Image 1 (cartoon, helix red, strand yellow):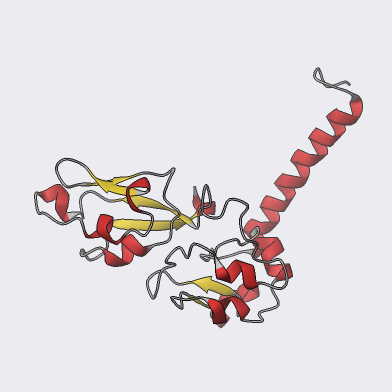
Image 2: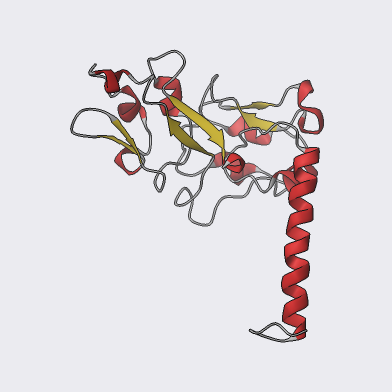
Length: 191
């Protein structure tokens, strides 16, 4: 049967491409038990695990020392580079030295650097945020290395997340004064 938009070859490419992506996603869900925040420029998780030689080059060149080794409990990902946002978030280095230093292609400098690139996505929990309880704060917005493009304050001093500009670095989460933080960072794949 022919695809209405093309040839039989197009139909098979489309069908097998879709099946291939689904198989890869299912395999990744079985192999990758826990999601880690990877350094900027990380390729998809399965490819990352196959390419990363655990050479530590990205760890060594990270200016804020945000990249650490995944613990032994991480299974197949043990010893691979990850970012523990609670310990030290990524600070959005303009030149992305970690990806530039990777010798294997597990990390690749994104074509447009940080424009459109995401480490994770933020969720605001207003019930925890003191600004929603009429207490002046704004710490998260002042800490954001991306600035107003990612996180600003409304006219009442409440945080306003801007998904299109946020890179998911975690700096605002760490800066938050509430316990637990009013902002939660999720790996990109959890959406």
